[in-house]
Image (tube, rainbow, N blue to C red):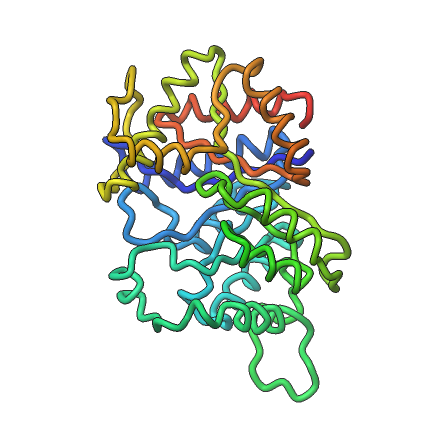
Length: 325
């Protein structure tokens, strides 16, 4: 089982964007030394607690700071961009760090409607996602006879594409195009099993991929004791409560307990965090093993929103010691 990391470059309360990005670089170096497979960053806009909005820029910094780990986007929200611009950006990254760059693609805008309009995108941009994926794939592939528009850099770089999703749409598209698939069960686990089943059932081999390959996203916080891990987890719980109630903010310090929530809010929070594994190694590892068996995932990508940077490094280290890694 391969293990990877998804980092949102969380900005903790009392810190700043610069320190959050420096922590991301340190986190990536730590994961690189521990043998993790890949380190992905995600595109989000107008979110005060996330510092990875300029995703390709951060990817370049992470790749430069590491030695062997694959680095990429989990993901680029393609409706926000021209396929040509993304081909040029990731072609540049591949030229600088050959064989280490991944390009995960999402259909959502990664923000709210008002910010999406500030990105100067059309309302129909998401509807063109399947065609934009094919256009981007062509721009990253070999130059064809008579081709007048080329991505320079980018052409013939063959950066591997991934389809990201949290619904059946992405599973169908990844299967149709023969691309690897990553399901965002770390925040939207409801359709996980149906999506993976559909992806495998309808998968068509392609030049990039001969058989289906699926990653499942999970929240993982490992500490030396269950009590310590549960306390660290309250930072992520506070973030999710803020998202659900419309009070987005920075990553808050942990608290001893979360105040009771209205039932409808609690239900949404629980749904958001349904694929979360929190505790000591003796608690987390058997639960993760059951999750792997039940999903048949080929790889896990781990999100660990932990307020204290050293505690996050420790969680990363403890997880790397698991028997199935």
